[in-house]
Image (cartoon, rainbow, N blue to C red; front, side, top):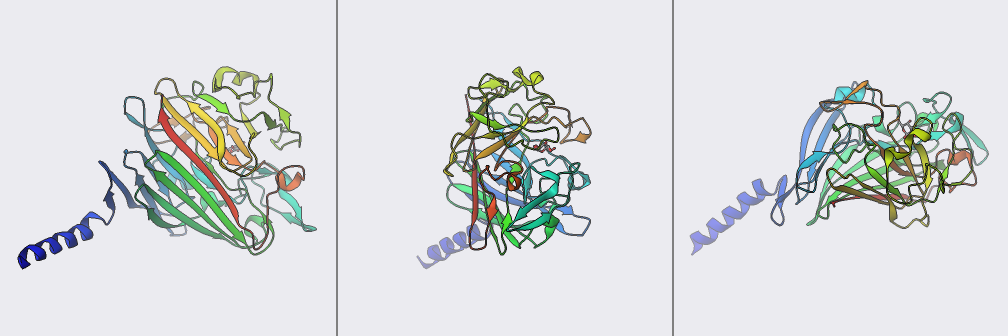
Length: 375
Ligand code: GLA
């Protein structure tokens, strides 16, 4: 009897030591979080790559460099998996420079005109990195920071909590800003990205994720056949430098109208340069609401994006020109599309747009959910 108990105890101890360390089984398949060394930055900071796998085999790779989503494996209607986000093979390629593939963007997604804004009567000057304008947080934005990572696991999800402290004055922004970005992959086939931030001085903030998607597969050519629905009756027109004019314009009767599902390419030739516009979402009360839905007819893959944010930047990879060697492929114009859930570009200079000011004692929160299915 005693021997049997001892044997059971030993078996449990062995299971705890080896079985549950990195991989936990719930249901039929194994959910797991795997960590691998992905190299070092030029400042000798260690970069890790985490692979999150849910119980259905969906897989997301997240890097501590830039909080970048490097790959996302999702099944088609026949159960065949493909990587549906653009990215690079190695850390060196990311460090050499890339158009924000999969990156966490901060402190401010998209442009701030001339890199200037005034808050509480003080004019702040930000780093300019897009002609005369400030884009995606400046020269060294959050996409180039190495984030601290902590694994998260529940019975129904695997995730990674990334933290970064942006110092007062970084890229010209006021206030020490503590940020948390959490990626969670659930067994309902959702990739959730949640953001939190707190400051010790009034500042402006607009965090987002810059993944480029192609639901047919990142290496399958252009995205013009992906069908898009945007839950937005209005958009914010821009000037030559892609700065919003301040107008909120109806999409009705124009090639900007995606209120019913339409192939991305069907009217793109009528939009100078391709789509690179902020849409004003119909739901803007801060609750989680459907922003966009994309369907790719050949694979049957569907991605629905819900967000708490008031806007989404729809960008059709207009600046991709073949110079970025991706994961075993070359990305040309329109190889991917982005749906960056966000506040509107240049809001710090547009009092009529929803406020992006964060004050001490307040908490910035943002949740975006990508739900995958097939049709
Ligand atoms: C955003 C901008 C684009 C471009 C890309 C990055 O989507 O709106 O104009 O700068 O990022 O290349």
